[in-house]
Image 1: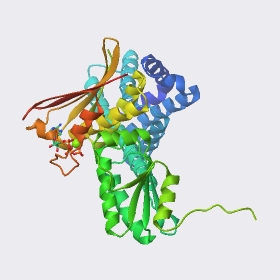
Image 2: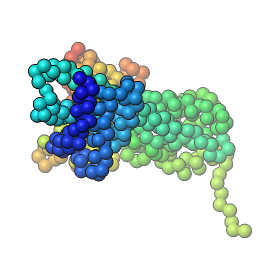
Image 3: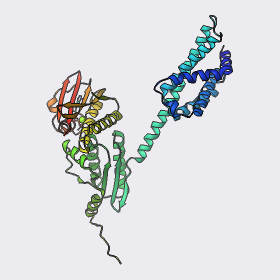
Image 4: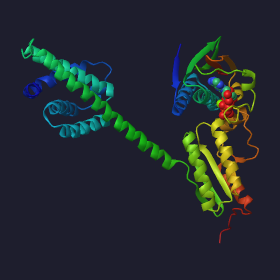
Length: 276
Length: 132
Ligand SMILES: Nc1ncnc2c1ncn2[C@@H]1O[C@H](COP(=O)(O)OP(=O)(O)OP(=O)(O)O)[C@@H](O)[C@H]1O
Ligand SMILES: [Mg+2]
């Protein structure tokens, strides 16, 4: 009966797709029919219909490849998984209604029809969810890497002076990375003063403060000095309210003041030169 | 009345709770300094839930009293509870090797502060910041 259903779908694909599209347009809450161009929807709907036929007629591998391509595409379109699963359910309803109307279903074959549909819909649902979750996992992984790349690198600024600009939220994992990069960098660049710039850190809570304090202690152990720069006024106030003691730190509000202090600490200064 | 909340299960939920708090604080009309205070307080409460309890929730709610407007933050969990609240509120008291500055900090960052806790049942901390 597999082949029979596939054959039926193939034969009546246009009408099934049309009915199905109408049914999906009735779905409330989905702005998607407004966002996507008609052509894209048309193509995608057709592709989906073909996919359904494929799953009934083609080999497992061929179907897998197709399914994967399709899922990646719809994920890229930004269709919600809820919407896609709904579409799947609606498709089976439309198919059932149409086959019923055309007198294809009777008492003898209804059981095997139901069985085939169930056997077909369950793995299809699983594959779609899996494809989605693969894409999500990949995205999260890539973003994590991107975040790590933009995390914490120690940049040599002058001889003996290095800067680490911190941007974004600091979680436990990043805090570890900051510490590692800081210590490696200090040794590698033979830094004597490190400027830790927190201008780009949105919230300095006790956890972040604690990590900064620990990082500074560690920097001291490898023979350098850590300065905290870029403390915005509101951050200064919250740090005080939290009762965090930064007395062991040299702190400045701006990078410029920090650099001046760092130069002074290493017995240097920036001077203006008269016109020649 | 306007209520919104974030379940705290992973470390990133802390960021979500903070973001919600900052948005709500902006809506109520708080300036940058108070926004930072509120956001930091939420960060502390959310992190405590993450660290010391299996799961909890941060709810944020706009409140009014007379013609005073404010933002109420409620951190609730079904964790182990806090046996000695007075000690937990002391600066420097910590059971996790932290700074022990979180709870006393929240008390100072916000205007009203209340802890209800039952050992073995959980903790509910309510803190309000008033718009002046
Ligand atoms: N929701 C909670 N449930 C159970 N115990 C808690 C809860 N919140 C705090 N505690 C206990 O109270 C102590 C003090 O909390 P507080 O936030 O002040 O400091 P900390 O979390 O230890 O360190 P810090 O917040 O400075 O990083 C904690 O160490 C913990 O034992
Ligand atoms: Mg804490």
